[in-house]
Image (cartoon, one colour):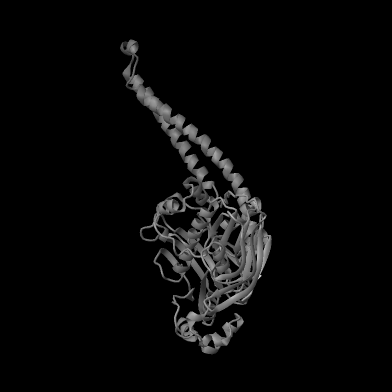
Amino acid sequence: MAIIQCIDVTFAYEGGYEDVFTHLSCRLDSTWRLGLIGRNGRGKTTLLRLLAGQLNPQGTITLPLTPALFPFATPESQRATLEVLMACAPEAPAWRLTLELSQLGVPEEALARPYASLSRGEQTKAQLAALFAREDVYPLIDEPTNHLDLQGRELVADYLSRKDGFLLVSHDRAFLNRCVDHTISLNRTTVAVQRGNFDDWEREWLRKNESEQARNEQLQKDVARLTISARRQAEWSRKGEKGKFHVKPDEAAAVDRGYVGARAAAVMKRSLNAQARIEKEMEEKRSLMKDVERVGELKIETLTHPKKRLIEVRGAAIRYGERTVCEGIAFSVSRGERVALVGRNGAGKSSVLQTLCGLSDAMHGDIMIASGLTISYVPQSTAHLRGTLRAFIDQSGVDETLFKAILRNMDFGREQFDIAIEQYSEGQKKKLLLARSLCEPAHLYVWDEPLNYLDVFSRIQLETLLVRTQPTMLMVEHDRAFLERVCTRVVELDR
């Protein structure tokens, strides 16, 4: 067992508006299977990079083991997969890599194939095999689920549950429940470490939030009352100071100006002392306010189409040139349904969505789309996002006030509105695409893996919104908890 410690760690990126961490302190056991959760932009990846020694903070970080950060900085390559993995884990024998890969469901023949020929999910599993084939390292795992299908997520979660210890960033609640035994959450101003999986953490979070929210509301009332008192004292002080120099003309001859000045000074001193006491009490009240993580309410404006059935696909196939990857596709989407397409990586799920939105011609077959159908589309990739937020809003043609209100409810700080989109985290970029879609009145919402990189609080927000408003949707998503709570029907595509 080794103890990992952060002591009074402060860090800010060069040119950043504020610290990512200020006086961060925590103590962790390296044998824990530890899940790291928190809002997008709260510093989860930054913490992994700090522990890996890639960034230089103020304060002290102690990590007795050799840190190993996943994913590795390995570009797609035409080299054999075994060569790529040996470069990631030079100390690991080939037999150990083969063993780890077999536990992740990757056949041994994949080691001889070019690394670039592996699917994104297979690359994820291959890199995890290289990570755990090494001895005496501490794995720092950053969002491994983003390119895994449902089956892949379950397999990897079971694989991790058999390992000794790691620090894992993930927003997939079902995944965390399967593989972690402790959680660490990055809150607004504190760090909390707790024993148990995500469900254990969520129960405690809800309990604390409810009690602390009620306490905060009372403290806010106290601060408001004290603010009024402080203003009153400031006004008395101002009047006292004015009284030293202003005497009514008809009283000027009879007034002892020395007495007036002394009296005014005494009034001013008492007022200033009272004001100082009130302001000190206000600061004490504010310091008692707890680290409540608010989950605001989102909005969506849907349109109602006159036809009941909006989409119908029969006997369709996905083809890329001469290669057919999936056939026999058949499903429909009726008004009020929320249909999810699931299946293994490479089955063509995204191509189905893109074809229906007029962005691809990969799907062929009997495809019916209701006339006059308005579709709002959220793509899987955020790679095209760049420039200013103002330009993004103008290009999207959405209501700026509503768009920014949705972002604020998804924990966007106002200062982020002035930052270039390239500087956003992947989760923050995904929120831009989702906020745009929520601002677009539509008959059908087509979302392609909308939860990729999205924090758990935002997932809860979206779930609450979709269950409450019940828009018509067609989506691709691999978060099992989200599918179970939101979708009315699941359609499986097979390669």
